[in-house]
Image (cartoon, rainbow, N blue to C red; front, top):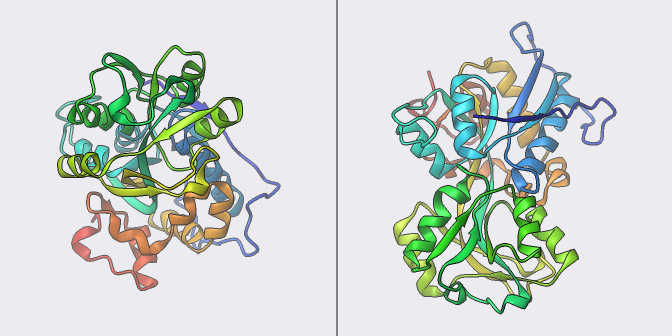
Length: 326
C-alpha cells in the first residue's frame, strides 16, 4: 500500500482560533500526526491537508496530510496504526470492518473509530460538452470511464452503479487531476467523480474547457438507491459554473476516523476544535459546511472513539455506551 507523504506544518496561523484548546494533560500525546487523504485534485486531499494544518496550529502538534488511495486504503492504514488519522466513507468502512476489503481480504479492520462527520460525497459524471454526452444513457457502448484512484469510494461503487444502469464501459484509474487532464485531451470519454463538492479537478476543468455535469433521472436514482448504501442528493446550481440548474445525483457520508488506541484527551481536543469552529473549517473547503455535530447520527458503521464521544455527549449529542469503543 504505497503512499506519498505531504507534510503540512505551519506555525503562522491562517486558521488559528483566538483561544487555542489546551489539554489538561499532554503526557501521552504524540509528537506529530498524519492524516490519510486521497489523490491530489480531489476533495479529501484539500480537506484533509487543510484540517491537519488547522489542528497542528491550534494544538501545537506537528501535523500533515498523506496522499493515499482513498477511503479503503485509509481504513487499512488506520487499523494497522501506520497512520493515526484518516478520512473514509461509510460504504468502504463497512466493507473493511466486515473483512471484505480488496486490500486485505478476510481482515476485519475494527481498530478504527469515528471522530466527527465531514460531508456527503455526491456521485456525478462529467463529460466534455463537445462530446454531446448529456445523460448517463448517452454514454456510448464501450466508453472509457475514469473512476478515480484504485480502491477509492468512486472506484469501489461507481463501476457497479454504472453496470446497474446498463452502461458498458472500459475502466480507467488514476488521480482526479490526471483523469481530468485525460478527459480534456480526449483520452477518456467521461469521469465518474465521487468527492465532496466543489471537486477541485472539476472546477479546474471548467476554467480550461466547456464541460457537462450529468445528473440522474428519477428512474436511475431510484434504481441506484435501491441497490447501494447511498441516498439521493442535489448538487446546487451555484456549485459549478457549468450548472444552470440543480443536478440530482446520489451520495454517501464521509467521516473522519482515528486509530482506536489514540489517547482520549488528544482526540477530545481535536474533536472539540473541529466541531466548535465550523467557520474555520468552511474556509478550508466549502464541503465542510456539513461538518457540524448535528450530523453525528449519519454514522451507523464505526464505533466512536471515547474522546470524540465525550465531546458529543457533553454538548447534548447523545452517543450510547454500546456505540463507544471500550
